Length: 166
Image (cartoon, rainbow, N blue to C red):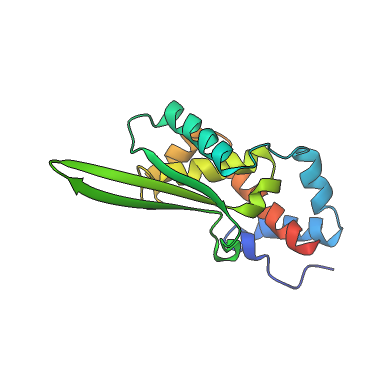
């Protein structure tokens, strides 16, 4: 028996991956698979800790990019709209200088996530500092900061599917 409802978080993945996920779900093994692969949740629980965490990654890989203005967890961020986090950008001319403000918001449900999933979201949002569109250069930057970016993205989406099934 296969899952009748479409897997909304991985709907854009190849059919083979969706089929493998459906088998794990139908056999009640998706949660076990994820818990075995990612046994701990991260410790970044406050907005202040999230700011420090993101800024450390930014300083390591993107020191010359715009500064990080504001960071927060948001319980109202709709993950269903494919948004795991949001990057907003604002530029202002101040005198003869161009000032940029970069804000990152992460869905609050990721407070319960494994550290790899939080890192994937942070890397994704930081990549938008340089590349606004989801193009080849964007994903190359994501993979530069996190070599397992694509695997973590898939597993994050599987985790979201699993959370809805519980």
